[in-house]
Image 1 (cartoon, helix red, strand yellow):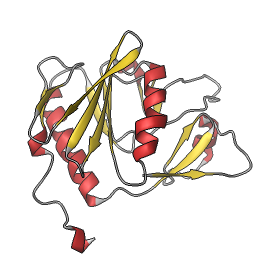
Image 2: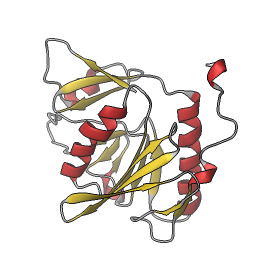
Image 3: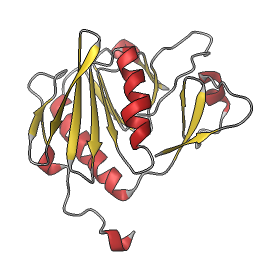
Length: 196
């Protein structure tokens, strides 16, 4: 869901994000800007179903779940010169001091990215490395085409990865007692290929 945006003014920082029109969706990784494409309806259905299960579990608890667009500054600097700014599909934040009006400052407790054909490398490589470096405890990569979820759990500075299938029930490591029923996120009302 992103394409590199190569103008001569790189490297970009969070200060550049603050100067752009708020309707413009972008991410910055190591000073390189990526414009965000509109999500497909299938992408939105998966996001809605995941958000719904997380939100239902978190009701009444002091934690928050956010869906895109929500800005995440993994390595925030007071002068806004941080060179990485991301907009994950879903974010769970257990430390409320990290939540600001603009999004999340610091590593969230859980991040979920939903793949699309244009962003698979972006999410599996570039973002993976940034989330690992920032110490994000749990990172899920959802592949709607394959109906699988890659679950990355931080353990002693590296991610331990497992893959869950379409009918699995997956516990959320950072939310004890929370289990996501994957069969519910592959909705029967997804848009058929012929109607795109």
